[in-house]
Image (cartoon, rainbow, N blue to C red; front, side):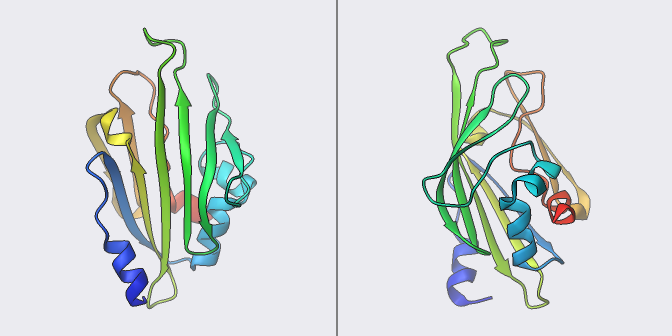
Length: 165
């Protein structure tokens, strides 16, 4: 890992962010594809029309309302950052509420040729239920929104993502 990559991967996340890191045996190029090829991303997340180009707007197809996103930063094989706007489903009391956040994926090559993956979902902690479940070495993270009975959707399954690629 380069010194710059090492310092980037150790930078502290904001207090309103959920951070998750893991080491994957797959190389960064494969993990990058799982994050940026619509069919591969859909295999572990949701149907989408992502293009990893700065400024590109895309959406994740969610049953009750799409999640609107815009690519803020993209460095192939290294960094993907996008805005995440999840509108209220209409089931909540205030149907005009929206959840705005930023999702950042940082990929660093490990000495063994795999990928050190860091996921930060900034602003997510403010609406997340205090219960977080991490499922062992396969790096799954699930969160539940405090005001909802349905699971919150977060960028959250790197192991499944790597298998999709």
